[in-house]
Amino acid sequence: MENFTQCYLHLGSNIGDRLQHLKAAKAQIAAQIGPISQYSKYYETEAWGVTDQADFINQAIGVQTELSPEALLDTVLSIEKNLGRARKEKWSARQIDIDIIFYGDQIIKSERLSIPHPHLHQRNFVLIPMLEIAGDWMHPQLLQTIEELYLTSKDPLEVIMLDEL
Image (cartoon, rainbow, N blue to C red):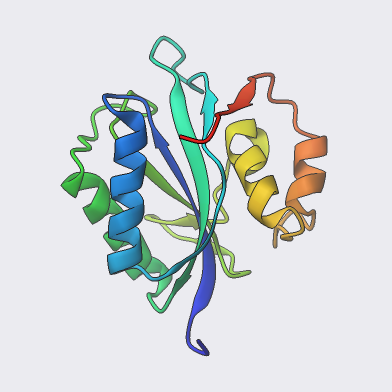
């Protein structure tokens, strides 16, 4: 897997059969992006940003991909659309949300793409699943591991690990 890049994605759903949406997303990710090398347990958390909506189920996954960062973004957006996501307003309720958290150790800032994800260090619902699968992963900008970022997080939202589903 010489030409593969390790990337981390974060999945979330708070409409309908949340768990089924995450499973469908993982199937499409494996088929269109690359093999899933790691995945966290499922976690439930209150909505972040716009809080007057249903709770989310979240999961972090590690994926090996040959796609460029831009092609990865296009594929993620296509998968979201295939699974019924309609982009209406920022942080609104959604069947599926797939965020690119890391693409190797690259730092990318463009009109379309910010990697590492610009808010990951402020969100326990991202940090806790990432801690489970990549606690030692070093944030290439903040120069702290996921574990260190979690230990200094000021996010008050509770993140609850769900029983095996």
